Image 1 (cartoon, protein in one colour):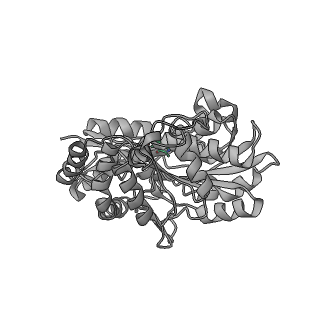
Image 2 (cartoon, rainbow, N blue to C red):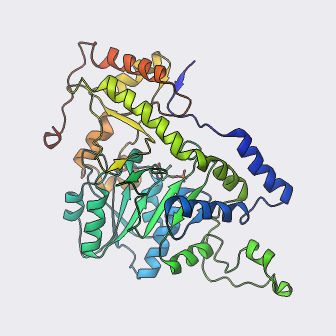
Image 3 (cartoon, rainbow, N blue to C red):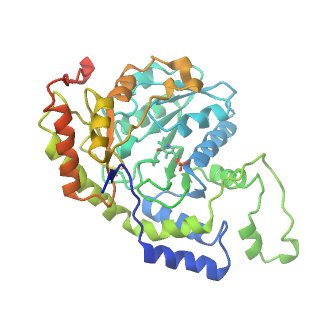
Length: 392
Ligand SMILES: *Cc1c(COP(=O)(O)O)cnc(C)c1O
């Protein structure tokens, strides 16, 4: 049996029961279960608002466009962001005709507050923060920089379902928090996302913009009492079709009660990795996790000297790890910033995501660790890790 990087686990009976409710009602679209899941997510996070979308990518696009409009940002205004992310994060900025300004990461692999502050210009309007792998990094310092400079804060929490910081769900001070419930994330559906904007006006705008700009969704129309005018609506925005549907929300409702216990299991696996790989500091390092963070452990990442060779070796042992991420500044769209984030480039060249999912056993983890050590420690031709000076 091969060991894959990710593999989603579902509470199948509960999923089928939730989906059955949609089919019996004859309602699989927006409304019904999407409303129910939005309410459950608000309870879970403590956030005031939550809008269920068809992906986190859609949610990011909506967040940026809506903040741009609300605050009247000019085209070309700058948003400081990280190169170490899935491209949706940065595409959202470009799609809104804004300019992604790449800032370097620190040893948590999240944005470095010092470099973020250094990159602020009169054109800076916001910071886009990614809680990488479920780690909150120095999020609190970034939040206070945003407050000090009057910048908006967008939290790409795609990896952070279930992450706690100081015992709470982080993101309360952000202008937008975006979650992903894509198939391999910690709360898997098929494809879905959530956009939480504390500002009520923004929440009402994103519900229109996410539904072609129409000011009444079909669900509101179906339950409206002045039934004679059900068909009457206005189109206020050039919107997109970004709304989530009841089938995805049904899966999310079935999975949410398992999120915290799943993340506890991930933590157990992470601790096993840490236990088995911690004694080899010359060859294997981990991102820094601060004490105030209880990560979701979406990813378990290591830095190693010869990453690509290690991948080949693990593949030969039937283990299939991943790389998160190639710095976005390596891609054609973002080449203008290539080489501007030295630490992110270092991570991009040395980072490896080891298998992390609910079907992995502790024995699997030990096997993966022994195969990692075979290559990285026992193999005399592998050199030591040449960490950036300020990370040692
Ligand atoms: C997965 C992911 C996204 C996009 O999520 P989708 O739901 O697949 O659109 C955005 N940002 C990060 C950091 C991600 O990992």
